[in-house]
Length: 190
Image 1 (cartoon, rainbow, N blue to C red):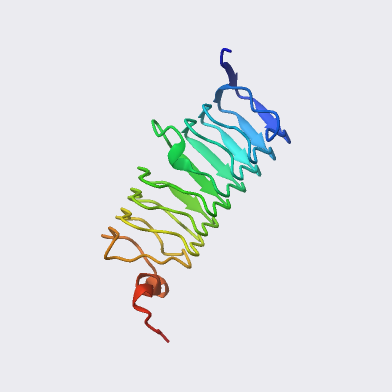
Image 2 (spheres, rainbow, N blue to C red; image 1 turned 30 degrees about the vertical axis):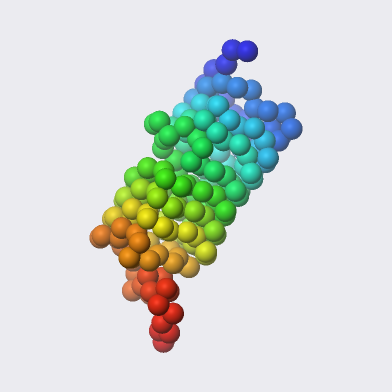
């Protein structure tokens, strides 16, 4: 089966959880309110695409290329981003639910998460230099051996980052957020 090429197409309210998205290259395409939940989205190629209001819960994204791809208002629970193709990887997330997702060992300098729910998301061994996390909720997120140099957590909440096991040089925090750096010490701040 040969892969197809789609350019400047819009896909709206499609259910790809049962019928797989046709394998191919998608460039400058827009996916709106599509369902990919538990579906096979592996070995695809997305360049300069946007996904709006889509559900990717537990989808298989193994070996998929995401180059300059933006996700807005998407449900992305349980996705294992470390399985996708990391060549030319460029992602942006706006108002997405990425709970229980994982970015283990990924190199994502400058990645942006805006207003995202990142509960129990795993960033172990990830390189997130200059990452931006405005208004993100990190309840029970995992940061272990994570490179966070120059990352911006100034408006993020509920994070628990141990500076002794993560690289936090010149990382930005608000004064109110400093408690997230001290949680391991079980200190009561009033």
